[in-house]
Image 1: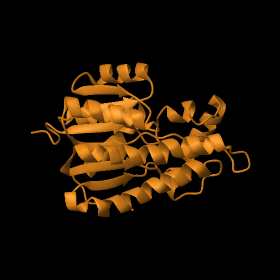
Image 2: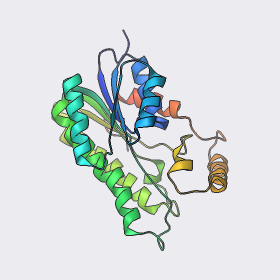
Image 3: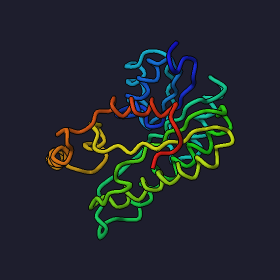
Image 4: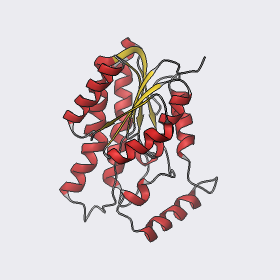
Length: 236
């Protein structure tokens, strides 16, 4: 019997990168997976890539009405949730002296507010003994010039897991945090605001600081997420 046979998993930011790799792995392990993302075209491509046991729901996690619609569909189609991977996130470069209110609000709306309500609104559907995995970043403990807003938002995510582990222990719902480093996803080129040349330089810089000499792969993070489903409480 597969590890996730018959389980229902919800993954935000599931149309590309880490979210897509995790959705594929969960389906291979027997789960029925619901993924959400902002772009309908990418969601359709993700569903075609995974092929079976996949439901897509277009929406923005920073919009609470979109989260309500997501969980209404999950309830109608599956009735409950066993696993939630709150993976959706965003980050753009903005040095302290140049950062705007719009930049700050966008980052915290997605990474903090969006993640908070992604979890809160899932709870009524959660089976006791389920698993919640939050996607933070290694930046939650590192100083990254130009990414201070992003890093602060990811530190908030790490702290959420510590508090929620205690809040949800009576329901035996486990809460874990992933803190990936540099990963080969489209985000570096599409959402950070870097030019292609700057992105290439950033990749080289990341690789020079990693003992393996390369960025991680989404599939490697997906494998780690899978291990957390049956693992102990929040990671520090």
